[in-house]
Amino acid sequence: MGTVRRHTFIDASADAVWSLVGDPARLHEWFPIVGCEVKGDKRWIDLAGGLRFEEDIVTLDHDLRRFQYSIVNNPIIKKHLGTVDVIPDGPDRCLVVYSTDLDPEVMALIIAGGAGAGLDRLHDIFPDQKGVH
Image 1 (cartoon, one colour):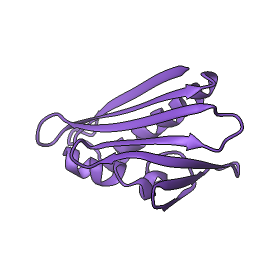
Image 2 (image 1 turned 180 degrees about the vertical axis):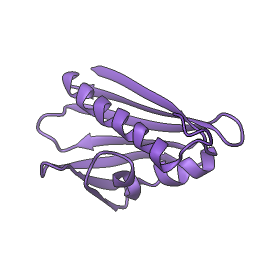
Image 3 (image 1 turned 90 degrees about the vertical axis):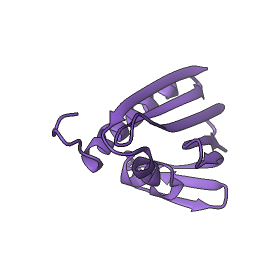
């Protein structure tokens, strides 16, 4: 199983960042996908190349600010768990951690690239006061 983790500090409150990151239907606003659809505990994401992935929403904990999902019904992906945590680091700063465990492990690198791009995008959405990230 491949395991990867990406993280970044955002100069915004954990609540503000969680309002975006913790909404499964808003993934396309910060992660490099073109769209998503949520129905109950299911989410489907659409990639730019036309691929569509089905996901189970495993955990959506607003108190912990933790979101977990699993890619399902995919002929290539045998097992997957993605986790996004938003952790307060003071009143106007937080740590966002995106991790994934995936089999086959080489696929974890692809998601890691997307996670890195998504975390970078959060800096555009929540720019810090100094203009540096």
